[in-house]
Amino acid sequence: MNYYRPVVRLAFMGYGHVARETIKLLHEKAASLPFSPAIAGIYTRKLGYRWVPGKAFFPHEIVQELPPARRVQGGPHKFIERVQADVVIELTHPNIDERGEPAAGYIRTALETGKHVVTANKGPIAFHYAELLNLARKHRRLLRFESTVADGLPIFNLVRYSLPLTRIGRVRGLLNSTANYVLSRMAAGVPQMRAVAEARAAGIAEADFQLDLDGWDSAIKCMVLANVLWQPIELENITRDAFDQRAQEIIARAAASGGKPQQVVTLTRSENGDVHAAVRLQVTPPGDPFYSLSGYDLGLILETDTMGNLFLVEQSPGLRQTAFGVLADLVDIYLRGIAPQREPTLFDADPEQSATLTDDA
Image (tube, rainbow, N blue to C red; front, side, top):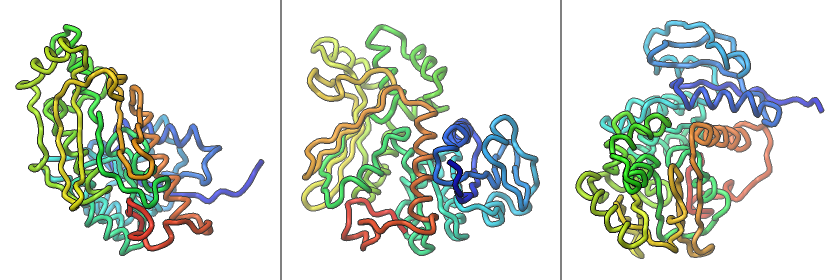
């Protein structure tokens, strides 16, 4: 059946593995999308700007080859201002040392120039969420970030659309594939650095793998979860276990008890609203939901006042799952922010009265 589908113009900030996989998915799912995606421009620090003013490229046109490069005076912010895009997809490197910059600045510029934003970059959401959310609301644009925590595991969309009026009191998670993979391989007798090399070969380890092992990556994800579900917490207030100091002890205890050594994230919200977060190496006993997870698996448990405990699992996630989180956010932005007509929903009411999660413009 042939029918009219509006064109949605996309600009990519960053063109690494996730961006490439996202464009592949856009091409693969083109017939099923409610819109026709067109890439209006690409910014990449290494390869320059890929932008032809007044022209956009459909995914199948650039799956194999990027469009021509064009120099833009003024740098990436000028590119964001000038590119004719409906949505900016921000996929640059998560610079934690710079507290999410320059990516947060790219998102600011996009929102201020009337563009919706999808990001898989946890830095801006960890350090600047409230500011960026207010900016999105001010300019009546949407900011989406499903892939920032668990490779596209539908955490935020679940809360946003399926858990209205629900109070989440506690969150537990396995949020770093590298740390848990290395622990499991060490428990099997594999040397630590060999296990790290395997994780790198699989494409899941950070360039600095100690960010994974020492809990920094999971701590940043704790900040994202706390920011969005509850209220901000500071990185220095999150308890972390140093891997080299505790790993062998935890592995020995797990072997003795029949449990599994794992890096587990815990966030709790007290009755008075205080939020506490920790990233600990611990022994997970048989019977715990996380005991069934192994390898690169990710998992999250939401303890709620309406639905009991919700257990979300993503087995052996990879680039495709991260890219799908980006795609799901893009579809959500189209349906809620771009489509000329849509049915009213609960989130069209006052967001403070309608749901736990409030990140709509």
